[in-house]
Length: 174
Length: 363
Image 1 (cartoon, rainbow over the protein chains, first blue to last red):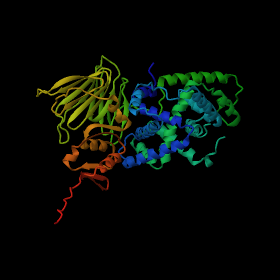
Image 2 (spheres, rainbow over the protein chains, first blue to last red; image 1 turned 60 degrees about the horizontal axis):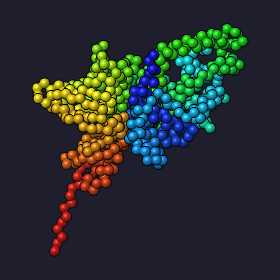
Image 3 (cartoon, each protein chain N blue to C red; image 1 turned 180 degrees about the vertical axis):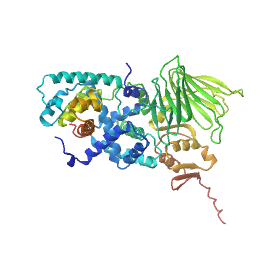
Image 4 (tube, rainbow over the protein chains, first blue to last red; image 1 turned 90 degrees about the vertical axis):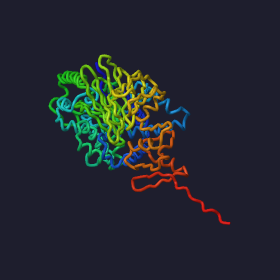
């Protein structure tokens, strides 16, 4: 069985995104740090001459953010210890990048609890649509059939649910 | 508690827009992408929301992959709260859980067959065979055989795979290749020679690999090949000169193919320096200022750095720069009192400061 595309992309050296996700994850409970990231990313986007020539703006956004994050983490590391950034970068290459969740069990368990709480705060149909989408990999049409809704409402529910998860997971961590 | 649509706050709206964009970009055309670019630079909030939405997507996906959440708990709650479809109107019906399980089973099968794509992966279902990047843009693409190509700014790569070979053309710029092992189908990177006004590479060059990782950079006057893993064969097809040849390059080594077709002896390189560009970091070891300025121009439309004096252009320095921060180079140059920087609009002209002729003291 082939690995899923996201997994393969991770393992094939698109490692900067992983570093970015790890950084973002560590910021789940510290939204003020996210503001610094937003500002710095925005400054660099503006420097690109309104981005007119950029053909893949999303990929570009990720690479800019990853660069900012690596600057931030570099500055952090310099403050905390004297590890040379270069040998770290090489280690990152060798790492198994299929996993972007924290390795720490306690941290992971607390994330899981946060997820459960967040799901309970969604309107039940939104939560159901979200679980079917992520857990069972169902398409909008499949979820629509399953829940007896129109695909259009499922689409709307999923958008709302995902946005709500983003807010709940990031702003209410405790 | 759900907030009603009319009083959803700005943050929620921005989060929803980000989710919508990620969804839409899966199948985006050029005008969608242009609209997305505009939206991104409208407010610092927007780019941040896209990043947060992507990270949330990955986290929720991974959490739900490892920890099963029973969807029935929400469905039974839904019957009490909302008016829903007939299937779930009366949850006391014994048939429903079976139905649901069957559906979920089918959903799983569909997930395995179709492969759900996270929005973080570029959709290449309709793969064009040519990939180009503009100033400052970097991309990573995945090939059908599992190999991957990271493409640097201002570069063009064409992919031509067949049953017997894997051929890739690097028409300009720089790319790093991570080649999946397939001894039956050699992986070849071709650089077709061109001797135009800007390029002085007259010979074709081929880099052949079986399963390895290497970086190829096409300069106007030479080609650099650096190997990070495994071994590659570099061949320059210079038919009319004795300087044609081939060389084996192993991990930790680099060679240059000169415009004439001559291949320089392998030199040691640091693999992390070779891949630094993927973190948008520019590593220079004894490079000329002109080379460094050229490199910054690949990442930044502005400021355009122009060096007018030949001896300054040829001055060599070593250092590590952030590719998106050309100011660092300018600050460095400004610290040299013999150098003069002139900023005009979006161009910075760098020249030697004219030596001040001291008037001879009288008397």
